[in-house]
Image: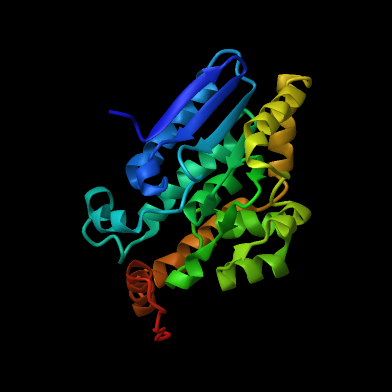
Length: 263
């Protein structure tokens, strides 16, 4: 039986492959734990200069597996919605591990990269997208916010005004805008996606490994990421218990327009 996240070392490249294509690579807790372990494997691998994260099948990731939230009591207790902080911290710890990886990380996006899937991509150092990829943070349309680093990391990339527009509307981001604003490093034809990622790794490999790693840490250390993550957790702990969240999830599952209550 295939694992939910696969790894493959090719010379100086460690590929991490989201491998749940029948569910559009929707992320559940088991998948996040395997992603966490894959980053550990990359850190220990000999001769690796960079990590590529990509999705198997038709897209990178459609986001969190909403149906899996019902099983959250198994990992986070029966009253997880009343005390969301352990769940948020657990998911944030995985994206933080990606962000803090000593190796450069490159997300190769195709098809769709939404919600939690986009938060995983935002935790990477570089993002390259195939033309036509749908990217965005639609959480507000479910009555919640991006709380696994998406709000904080997006704001750091694009600034407050654009981050507000993206997060508060929940709309998809135009790829040309995303490249212009610095969310994406490049938009390429789908058939060139892997080649472009490998080309970037070849360029990184021309620089000294320690210099690359230290440059990453210095640049990442310029923003107050920790406070942003704490604020995300606080806001989500309120929203997850709202009537609007229940309305939003039901509307998504039934493909109906949500009738918000503001409660």
